[in-house]
Structures are given as structure tokens and as C-alpha cells.
Length: 91
Length: 333
Image (cartoon, rainbow over all chains, first blue to last red):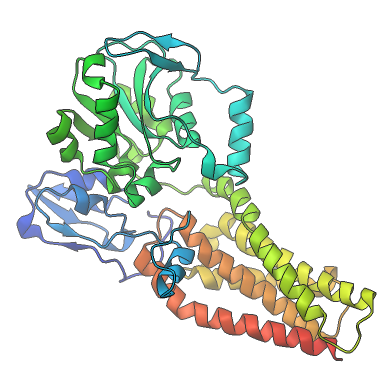
């Protein structure tokens, strides 16, 4: 998203261009318009906008994209920190 | 519901595409967080208008706010709505939790006999469901090609007429969209209000002066601070988000500081440490609520939120403890 930015250099998004077949699904599904296909390969335009939703990695047919998806919910993260509260959820 | 449509498979309920009063009241209740966790629609196939075998099939979640947004956006159109069982959760969150998934969609395609209702083999999915749906799995399992439509239901008519464009593919977080989540943030604050009330009562009972007016005055001061913190962190912060710094906690604390200056103005008179403790509580609460708001935005990543939490939670815990100490100290003066 162009108007809103959170922290930089934190996203777990990793992209291997050698594996890319240029299908363009990553570019289609990304809600922050991070990918674009140029000359038959996807290119990462704006890595810092990644919110780790995981849509690109799930739909990539060749496993060229890896991201650790998750829910950016503070209460859920705190529950994850507490050893006695595993597997709970919020929202 | 406004009747049924006979199809090759079975009778399909026909939905209204204009809201009626119960829809509007239900939306208000859900937006206020009163019954948003049991606001569901029965999964299955529905008809909007009078669709035929060539009509498009739109896939959506069974959260009623989602279902309503989709059907009202499609007023005047003839098409099918395939509602997946997401346990009453919206598409994006359900995708993240795995209930809006290829398996869930395939299940509904089979249950509803969709291949006998329509002659084509194409499903239009909401783009935001892509974090839960591997589109190719649907084709493999039931022969339907799943394509991702626009992010917002309101763009569906334009999408059906002209196809996709960049604007339909990007999420937004406009003032209007942020304002829509403020009531829920405030109402869900009731737990915080309750806990801080209990804490306020306990802290107010510590001190040499235990007359009822003195105790009530202290509780009043604490609740003033809590109320101001809630307004700053859960209402002002979301609305002013474009003007806030990158760290949500810092923005919430800054707004809380502005709110804290009002504590001695509108709260009951007290010794300076109590006022300082109450003000610090406003800052802390506002900062926490702002941090918590990351979960309601469509752009913060879990890695980013965790990093921010590791940096700010220790400060917040310390500030909360210090505010309690200051508050009680004031009781002894």
C-alpha cells in the first residue's frame, strides 16, 4: 500500500527467480501489488509493502516464492509467547 | 430470501439484492461487536436475480456482513452465489485460518450439484481469499476453473462488465473504512474498562483516607484516565492513522499524552502523584490500543508487529506498573 507503511526489513518474503515460470498468479493475487511479470519472469517491485498474507506463495505453481504467513494480531502474538496458551486464537 | 428458483439440481433460494430493515439492524449490531461472532448464513448456493445455466458463479464466505455486501453490490444482476462455510468469518481472515479454502469450495460445489446447475466451469473468487485458496486444486478436484475477481465486492459489476484492472486488485484503508472498525474497537474495550475498574477500586482502597467520597473520587479519576486512553487509542488513532508514525505504539502514546493533559482538567481534583499516575495510564492504554490496532489494518505483517511488540511491550508493562505506584502514592498525600 502506498499510503501506509509499517516497519521495513522484517517481511519473510523470499523469491527465487530461477524457479519462476512467469504465470503471473503472484501478481494477480497480491493485495499490495508487489509483483509484476516482465519478460516472462515475475519481479518484486516493492518488497517492503509485503504483509505476509501468503497468497502468492500458496498459488505459485513452482514454489518460487516462500513466505511465513500469519496473523498480525498483537493479542495472538502474546498468546504465542505464553507457553501455557498454545493454539488459541483471536478475531 | 424472496422465493426459490427451480434448477436441474435442486431448488435454490433467491436472495434480495436490496437491504431490508432487519439487515440494517443486524449490520449495526455486528459493527458494534454485539453479536458479530454468530452472524452467519447457511452455506450453499443462492440465486441473485434470475440466473440461468450460463450465469457467472460468485464464491463468498458465510459471514453475513460479507454475504450482504456481495448480494447488495449485485443488485440488478442475474448470477449465482456459492457460499462457503467459513464459520461466519470474512473471506480474508477465513483464508488465513484455512476455512476459506479449496477444500471448502470443492465441498460446496459437490453438495450443491453445481455442475448440473450451470453449463460453464468457472468460479469467480474474491481476491482476498487467495491466501487460503490454491486455485489449481479446485480445477483438479472438480473441474471448475477458479479465477480471482476484485478485492472489493462493490467492484464486482465493473469486473463482470470490463474484467479486472489494477485499482480492483489493491487493498485500501480509507477514512471511511477505518471509521467502520472504530465502534467494534470501542465496544470490545468493555473488557478493558471492566478490568481497569476492578484495578481502580483496589488501588483506591489503598491509603489512609478511606471515606466513601475520597474513594469514589479516586475511582472517578482512574476511570477518567481509562476513558481518555480508550478514546485516544481506539478512536482517534485509527482515524488519524495516515498522520501517525510507523510505530503504532509511539503514535498511540503521543495521542495518549495529549489525552493525559485533559485528566486534571475534567477529572476530580487529586494530589499530583495520583494525577501523574492517571495520566501515565492514559498514555500506556492508548499506546497498547494503537499497537493492538495493527490486527485491524490490512498492511501490517506479523513479523513487523512482533518486532514492534518486542520493543514496546516492556515499556508498556513498566509504565503500567509505575502509573499504579504513582496513583497509590498520591492517596497517602
